[in-house]
Amino acid sequence: MIECYCAATANSQKATMMLEECGVAHERRIVDLASGEQGSPAHLERNPAGAVPVIVDSDGPNGEPITVSQSLAICLYVAKKSGKLLPEDPRLHARTMQWSAFGASDLAACATALYLLSRPGDEQERALEIVSGRLTRHLAVLDGQLAGRDYVAGDFTMADVMIYPTLLPPFVDDVLRRGPSFANIEAWLKRMAGRPAIARGM
Ligand SMILES: N[C@@H](CCC(=O)N[C@@H](CS)C(=O)NCC(=O)O)C(=O)O
Image 1: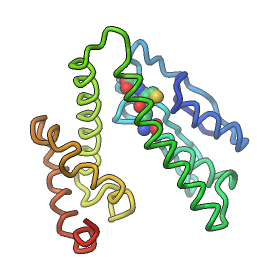
Image 2: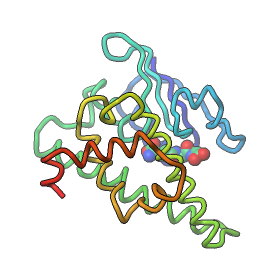
Image 3: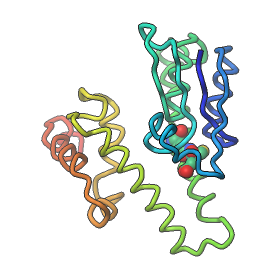
């Protein structure tokens, strides 16, 4: 059985719509964002980023429980578990991944930024504070993930490639330099920079 920790938000709806469309048995566990439940120790245990959606599958790989956050990763997990909505044909697979990444990154980032920056009462300074606060929170999560690991998922994977360039100047450089220090990220940045193929890809 899959428990889906969610709220009435777009990212949660990606997870619950996918679970419904794929006919995967699940139960919704509503996280009360207004009261800050996403920051409770129980939820942070599920997702150190303090965000929804999160799924907990008691019957994960090899019958072992697994917890997955990030709506794109959840949708991929559900697609693979059910064998639905992720075509195997290489062309259709690539196209499906292209548009999934578009939804999860470009589109979601713009829509979220617009939402944060246009809330009534938020002056630009306050908006910048909100966005850099969120970025710092994401960096803290990444730093925690890199503790005791050479790379984001343990071994070097596509996930490192998906994250590394965004952390290079000029994007989040300022937050990295002026904010709290993230020793694990700094070490990983050096490790990444030392990979000849990464250097060639710059
Ligand atoms: N990239 C993540 C974003 C998750 C996210 O930001 N969730 C929001 C709701 S849409 C949340 O939980 N916000 C609570 C908070 O920031 O305190 C995903 O796709 O799942």
